[in-house]
Every structure is written in C-alpha cells, then in structure tokens.
Image 1 (cartoon, rainbow, N blue to C red):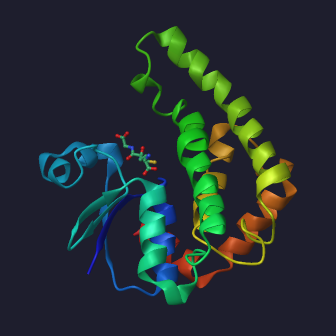
Image 2 (image 1 turned 90 degrees about the vertical axis):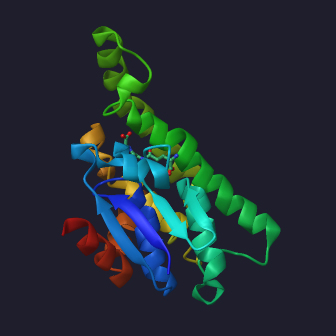
Length: 206
Ligand SMILES: N[C@@H](CCC(=O)N[C@@H](CS)C(=O)NCC(=O)O)C(=O)O
C-alpha cells in the first residue's frame, strides 16, 4: 500500500485529494514542516529533496506533484482521473499541471521561501512585494485561457482539479482576492462539495 508524506497547507494537498478520489488503498503520514520534520535525517532518506509530497510505493519513492498525480491516475484507470488513452489530451493535462508546478508554485514560494534565492533582506522584501502581482497574473491567465469549466479539462474531472484547488487556496495569503477570478472561484466552491476533498481536508486538519 503506498504512503503519502504530506504537510498541512502545502502543495501535497493535491496528491492527497487525488488519492482520495482514486479509490486506491493508501496511508498518509503528516509531517510538521514548521518544526523542520522535512529535513529530519529519517525523512531525507525517503526524500533527499527535503520537501513534500513524497509517495512511497513498493517500487520506490515518487516526488514532484505532477508525477504523483499522473501515477495515481494511471494506477486507478477506473476512477477516470486522466485521459490515459488520448496522448494529446494527456499532454494538455500535463501542460496545465506543469504550469502550476513550475510557475504558479514558484511565484508563491517567493513569499514564504525567498531565502532559497537571496540573503539580502531588501531582496527578500522585494520578492515578497511582487507575489500579489505574479500570482494575480498567473490566475488571470488560468481564468481566461486554461480553465475550461466546470473542471479544468472541461466536462471531465481530472487530477488537474485538485492541483488548481490547492493553489487557489493560497491566493488570500498571497494578497490576491480569489473573487477577482469568477471561474476559478466557482471551481474552488465546486471542489469543496466533493467528499474526497472534504476527506483530504480532514486528514490535513488532524
Ligand atoms: N516541485 C515540488 C515542490 C515541493 C515543495 O516545494 N513542497 C513544499 C511545500 S508546498 C515543501 O515541502 N517545502 C518545505 C521546505 O521548503 O522546507 C512539487 O511540486 O512537488
């Protein structure tokens, strides 16, 4: 049975929701990131990157959210979480998830994790100050050109939806009002109605 290592309020929520949606049996192990548990020697043996999520399977550990989401979808084809039989549609799904991972998440990280890129206090402040702008620009692009509705990929729910839901949840703390983006806000509300999302949020909160 796979084990997902996650932390509250992190990008690992997307993987947690996907696992809940998949119907696969899994266990979830919560790390306290504020206490630095992601850098504890035992966890670094699991994921030398010192980050969450990490999905431990009997064949080895998978890191990086888009990879975990694609793996979960492929391991549970009956759940229909990705267009596995259509290479073009699958590539579109991966393009969306890659954008969240490589651009939106990095925009966000400039607020709480600026020390990855600079030590100068003025540079750290400048990075933080830019986050409302970069997050809003990315979400405007998602709203206008990517989110088809009602789900990211149109009528078909996929693993892109928990990932978007997770990043939308970061907007208020990044200084962006989600209500500015009508489709994104409606998507977030729709996601909150799903039992799998509620179960994942419950796992985060205990
Ligand atoms: N590219 C990775 C990013 C993973 C990542 O940065 N996770 C954050 C939480 S959202 C983390 O573990 N941060 C802990 C730290 O930086 O110490 C992914 O998409 O899975």
